[in-house]
Image 1: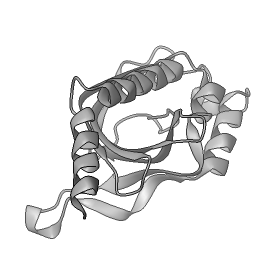
Image 2: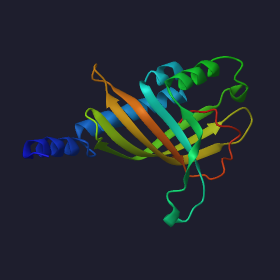
Image 3: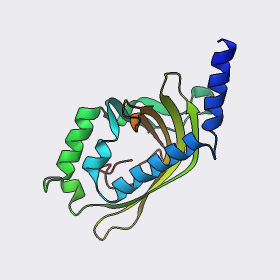
Image 4: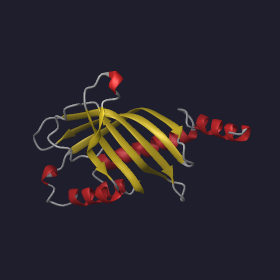
Length: 182
């Protein structure tokens, strides 16, 4: 990499640091996304994704550290934009039995870190999450873990989610189902 390219890359890295303008923009984007989910504005939420998105929640297993991070090649959720859109459309009908009555959720994000991604106009974003869910008279269900996102700046200058990898902490999902969105 040439010296000017390193300087530009270094400046971009600095602006991704907490307190920087780009970091603040990403943080606000993520907070607004969480608000859309908690308000059940799923049509607006799915509009935040790129046409080539991959939305993945691999199955977690308990492994010794030497055997890897403990996520399997198969997944609880492995969606593209078409399956995400279908999921959203179904949630907005009365045929979504797993969400009748609808869940009430709260999405919490912390430890957000932003870095330039290898591709131009993309950012690698890591964040810890906690999602609480209640439905009907059932008690709280709690999901925790880490999200690894790739955000892409589109032609209009807005950010969109190009990839989301949801890494749950639980090896046994104790929720009644996985009909909520992360």
